[in-house]
Image (cartoon, rainbow, N blue to C red):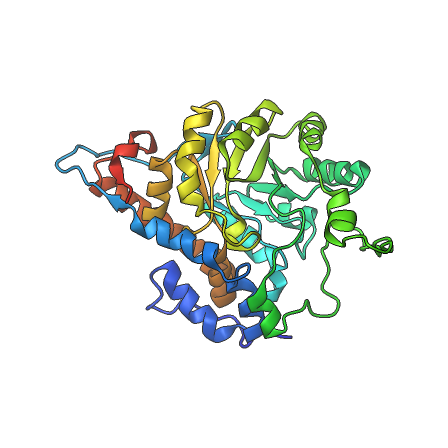
Length: 365
């Protein structure tokens, strides 16, 4: 399995939005890789709902506002950021570009955008952190706490600034589009930060591969509290859709939560992430920062998410489209484009800073 074409040496002039990068990536990527990237779980109801729900939100502009001197700066987990866009963890990035995560990290360094390195990265944490940008690390809890702790220590030593612990995918979703396309990882492609997989124990007669094998080793709330106590880094719990789970994560010591349905790739039929956001924001009542992802395609989408309670947003597929098309240059260009879109939206909405964005700026259907 290979990419369909080499990355473009420069950005074509007709690429002016995330959607344009998608259009080019669809032509350049191997169809099987594209099915893996673009597809969601099951019938892709949730995948479609993520973007449709954001599109359905109406912005209510306020005119003649004084927004001179405005900016998109914020402080998140004690760190000053120039804008609220973060590169979400996406695994296996060498599927999409020969430099993989290194190219994404180079773009994050140029744009000073936090890059959350996936637990399934094809480059080591140390190599990615060596590119000079702000790096976070995403963790899937390992069956043995010692293995999880070893990852945490490496992330700390490499200079990572936060941990994301993904809790909404203890088992993989049923990704029919990728199955139909015959997607499989190419020979030799491995998760650079994880030990080699071992064969699961044999099932006894009548046992379920899901409940008696995969889910037997799944983490619980006690593991979140343990992880928080095992590191000096702020821990964000990724994959929250219910207000009670958000509150419980904060009670366990999490620095914040991430409202996400994994981009529609795990549980088909789950709500659009933006639909779940307001109730979670109301429940936490600013007790902890809220990150948001799943469906962000424009700077105006980020504005909508912030209006409904998010402090910052993560982008996933869009920066992988840009990576596929133009490598680090494409990712940096996409981040700049999204920031400019957000600035223009804020100006037209009469919002000088992110703190000026209010729920009343958005009308829900």
